[in-house]
Image (cartoon, rainbow, N blue to C red; front, side, top):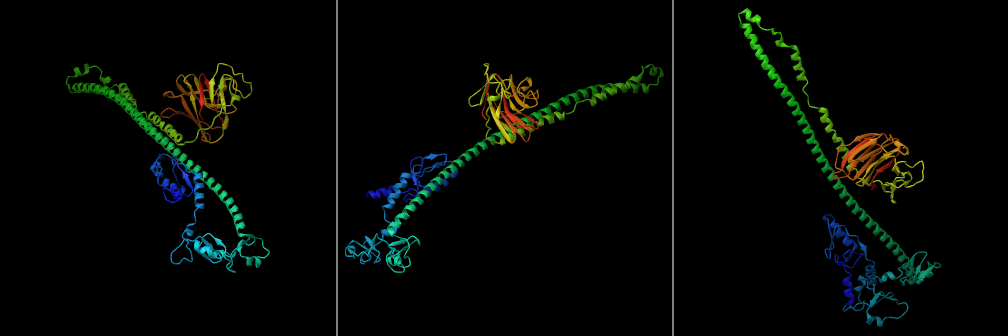
Length: 517
């Protein structure tokens, strides 16, 4: 009864057979590895995975943990059970009713129940074994004698006549001893196979984890791209409104100018009509004295006045297509933002080089944060050290596309950008942006500016943000700056032909900044 209860506990609830390579879920229920894998495969597209036993849910595909104690229990249980083909072996001599066999005689090639076993020959030639249906395989097919030896040279089982005949002089072993040796080898092979299977399981788990991370990454990229295009559509809508408003404004301005000129010309037209009528009246008069006493009519067609009005007609403004085109040129900034937004990668790891830091700048232990300090750090004077409160990165970039991000404190001002390693370390032109070997974004007094070779480009006012991204495309010769507020705003892109490797560079003028890339 206890054996039957144990047998029931070892059944997989999916296939209803005894466990094969049992694994455990987080909820504690066990299943055959193949069975639960098939169930999880069917749940792949549903977005949730459930235990077939208790319906416990999880969002990610659960890891399958091999239940080693249960594997051992199943193995021991199976080893104590007779083979299925032997459980239905009956006594050869009980012909009236089937009686289960207790032993099989290899000599007689017959199975015997307990009663027939008592009267069976006890001769050494009659070798008894557990009940079996393959008794003929235990005899030599040449001499029809029981196999008792194993020839190690020919790797075959032989009888005593084979050992004295064709296998004479060969190294032979008793079957049981040879079997034990073979079992030891098989156990070693089994151990190696078990190790390889466990390694394979680990690889499968790593690949499943990789797949999960790839799915999460794809979801993140999808969200970023969706947000990016939503932002681009908003920017395009805003740009369309601005361009159409500019066209309407110019049209209204031109229309007002033309209407004003038309009004003046209508007044002039009335005056000319009046003069024409008066002249016609003079022409129809018969009294010469009256005609001749009229003032000189030569000024009635004043050429200078006509030219002045002609100039007014030609001087009426037209639509400023250049201004409209300049506003539409903002599309290039949107496209630049599109390119950078879609190109998703991990931020470049940036570490600040303390050997280049000025003495009024404090560098954190992880070399990610730079802070203004009014206490002189008293670092040793070296050719690499900057005179002013700035520092460059240890890493240099001579190819590829890279980006890094900087987060700022609310106080102070700062400069972030990139520079050549040949930048001056002392003197007024050593500050980044103050020479032709560096480019930087400057934040001062709630205003963004871009500086290169001491030339300052003030950028349009936007909502202040405490986080910016610096994006480098070395081969394209582009260095772009972005504000990472919501939504991300492209601030400016500088274009140059880079002739040296570039270092990240920062300068703090009060406050602090932290590099997150």
